[in-house]
Length: 232
Figure 1 (cartoon, rainbow, N blue to C red):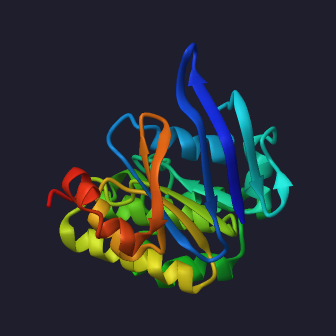
Figure 2 (cartoon, one colour; figure 1 turned 180 degrees about the vertical axis):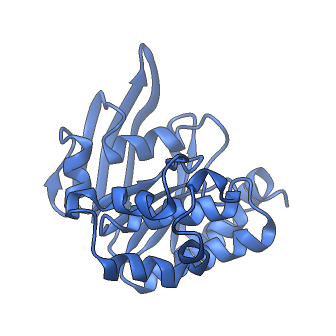
């Protein structure tokens, strides 16, 4: 579904991605783990079209999208849930969802109802300002907003950041549910143990390069990775 070849990206004269390769197959959960500053968020931003690339290619479902603007990538079926949620705090919960479906005329009531079924608390608070939600509720809203664009590939950037353990488990349960619905997921996550436990395959990125890749079960069993990322 997604093929990235020799991808390079920079902030000014500082190159952050150094020609990395990555692929995601249809209906997989693929996780990307690595330390702070390794280039994880830059890679997601490059895929979604909000971070310029300086070399290489991004192919989605057989189409080269390297030069496409972000909104055209959304129309093709790529949506990102950004790090830090970035909801519109001054708007209502429902208005946030409607903005997620702006390419589809604001989405349909059925689509909103599907989101509310997935996150019942959002239905309860649908008329309230989104800025008043708890951190976990804001994360649910950010995921729901992305789903309103009808994605086939969902990019999740640190969905468990700052959440209590019980909410982390709930978020990962939702991720598994989305895979069962046929949505392919590329997951960036500092909680490496949870990400590897819930994903099919994984990539390790260090200072802008992919250093390890393989089945998540194999990565979990790698002694060096366990010491570096799992604290074991």
